[in-house]
Length: 407
Ligand code: GLV
Ligand code: MN
Ligand code: MN
Image (tube, rainbow, N blue to C red; front, side):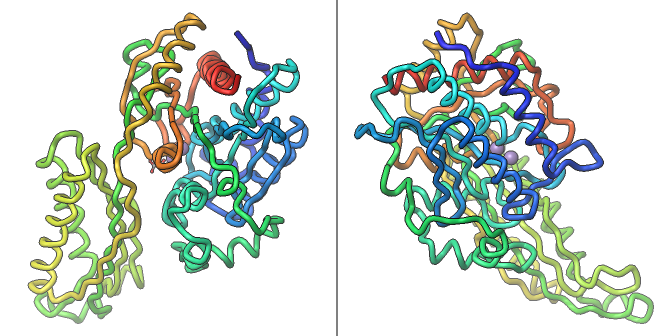
């Protein structure tokens, strides 16, 4: 069994977490922000130091390849280096750095491999600035370059404008479209409390829940807060508050693991003495069943249309993102389980409630995910934490699984 270089992995995690570090102890690296671009440059340099052949594709997926001369199917692994606002140090970064470390260890140990391998930092996984999973969707042909370029961020910039501003040197062809991975592995922190509560070291993901995001624009009327009688108002935020309550109640009623969140709200003009004229909000529904997500969406549509009339506001509603639930590949899960046993680590099978590039890569490749425990289940928060030993265990499971697949 192979052991990766423990201190090198932990050092690179420390170094990367300094890029975009916040005063809260977290990290903010929104897709193609200056800090995220700096993180990509750090990854490119690290890949070069590891002796990998580096490709940056047209949407800024960063790909480091080992053993590129082999003519067999590409074995890929990775995650993302963009983060949410004030997110944690490990979400995404851990999977990318462990992937590079695994390939670096293969090279140093001069292990004979029958397949080419790639460590990937996918572009825009989180979907805070732009809708989620742009990089893996482009890599798998689910979205065209033209459609990626036209995506508009919450700040108004298009993806194309953000790419140009980044000054990253992009290749004109999609490396992953030319070298389609036969396998994709993603190592990630759990981001929930299950492994810690059960005292297990490794989670083997069986399925990833689906996510649908719906953007609602509410158009009322901005009027004077002192002079406009209560019955003459068109208050967009008041209407938004009804949607927020409805989504919470609906998710509780639907049960079966349903969750519904409104985490993005933009109020215009956002002034204490003006009735809110415009509100934009994004609803995030998740479930392991596509039917339940459909049901939640249609109930929301109904509620919005019925209530808007009564409240005298106008509504625009559109789907921002739709990521169907995905089952991981059985044979890959079994292999991860075998390797975990060989390493003498404890494991459990589980579901992922967070989205990952793996749910997209599953469309084209045999795919598996490895989880390690998150302290107190905290994630998408500066409080995100995983013990060093757990980080190393996960990286060793990844490296040995990759090695077995690539023999
Ligand atoms: C990504 O972390 C997501 O699950 O939204
Ligand atoms: Mn992630
Ligand atoms: Mn995340």
